[in-house]
Image 1 (cartoon, rainbow, N blue to C red):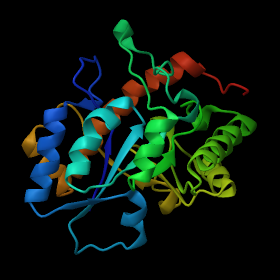
Image 2 (tube, helix red, strand yellow; image 1 turned 180 degrees about the horizontal axis):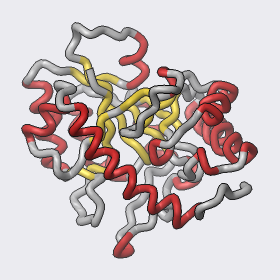
Image 3 (cartoon, helix red, strand yellow; image 1 turned 60 degrees about the horizontal axis):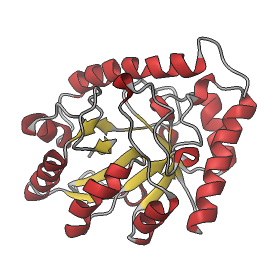
Length: 255
């Protein structure tokens, strides 16, 4: 069964497709429940894997305010818990790590909101400190992003942080080695091929986007048309690389 990856559940217009509208999100969740699926956190999904159950891991990247404002009310009413991956140095701040075409910006959840989700049974994971592409950082910079984000979240939540979502879905063997050394138990990616990497640190997810009308969303739940969805995801990944190039340049910066 799939691991779904959302970003924003946002009514405001944005030039990117990495959002869903709140009514769209509600319909998707209700459609899945009607079809007999049930949603769990990533940790619960991995703790007892089974191909026979209609279980779906529900995850959110970046920790936007819209997750708290629009996704949580829907999920709370249905007694569903999810996993949210937080960019720690942008908590309570605008998403200035992104290129933001058209100067359209969105705020990340602050500590109070993240704590409220944690208290409600949500799982909190790391999305690093600064949302840099870890594969393009120096070894020291990479370790700082991994270790500090985990330490900060654990200090605020008084709970272990077990999983990481790699910014832009990018990882490699060196990043995974540092994740293991930092104490992470696993990591999630998006559409890029990671077949040579340790499976538990390159768990593949299926992104849900603005263009996912009901039939497409149903096929994602069924884990069908994998090649087609991989191709679409690769296109989105390539577009996200533009942000990487703007922020980090062509070479590997020393951080």
